[in-house]
Length: 75
Image (cartoon, rainbow, N blue to C red):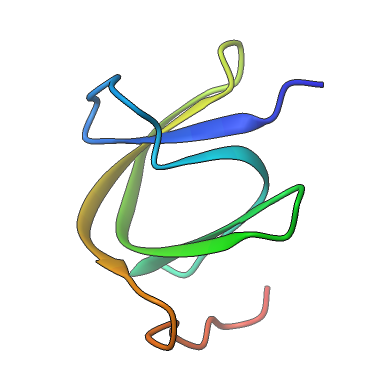
């Protein structure tokens, strides 16, 4: 199984999150959830999705901590 890894600003260092099974986008924030139930919310936008290599490249302005998670509009 090849789940996605998220990286910031085209830098291919350590991913900010691995094993991503679901992403919600609302235009301002990106909520990512792993197959293990871990969630991370990023303020920013998706720059690129590479399906072949399971990579998501994000342009981030701020990583939100726990308790700062915004309400995302339902899809």
